[in-house]
Length: 372
Ligand SMILES: [Zn+2]
Image (cartoon, rainbow, N blue to C red; front, side, top):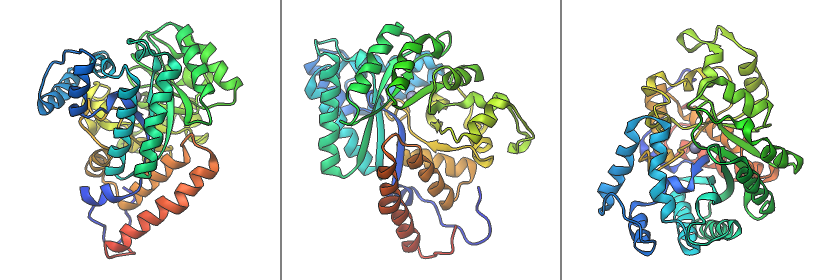
């Protein structure tokens, strides 16, 4: 996209997988391995729509082809149903870390809502502690850094959101790095959950909110100016505030200026946006408008199982559709690391000891330091 002169590196899937990447928007209950779901279904007495791993993968991704966020969220009834014991939660968290390692991710922020994992008697603390155990063990074995984000749900009563906010703050310093509001957006404005957001703010903690995915720019505005969010999950509808013929901005409103000028990170998830019907086709995705015009964009997977994707695949999609260069991938990765909720020294450490050297090494190995 910003390629400039000079021969360009060929951005193969293998090369991108080898690059040290950062993932900020990944739902733990949206990324289970199909084999794991099948095994856990037995101990949880859950009846699944398919009994073969391949067919189950297809079922999950076909289920998303209904193209509304509401339909998309239906797949979670099965994934959450098999994550109801301490062992299951730790296992899923551990396997996610291994999957990150295999995908070249060096820092991941994964998220889940303890509200969905109490069906077999666990309390919220047991849910979080089990997940953290799996993440810590995975981090030790696979050398991937992590942060856990606790989600509240738009569609559930605000009292539950406050409870989730309290859980998030309680486990700060033990691996939890922030608080999120997720779930169906239409008819469920974020400002209904102000008590939870005020609690997080009063405790000097981190907020990200799914906003502007299935609903308009008002949702983004509320997330920022009522709820005090530090990042925006998706933020697609920010484009409603921008006139950009040929992807170059000719006019923009105060909201989009604010997001750009304050460097508010947008957690973009391409495949997911297609699967939930947020965009009819990825060629209409506002990614190039945001990216070319200086917004702080990060690239993420959202739900790897439901969208049958990986972070490498998401970068491949962006490379093909939006003509990204090696340098663009590095910039998006640095955007991700700068926007992470871990502490500033940890971000710097990963940038200077892992990300920059990793990109430099692969560029050198690919035979041309002049390449973009
Ligand atoms: Zn999400």
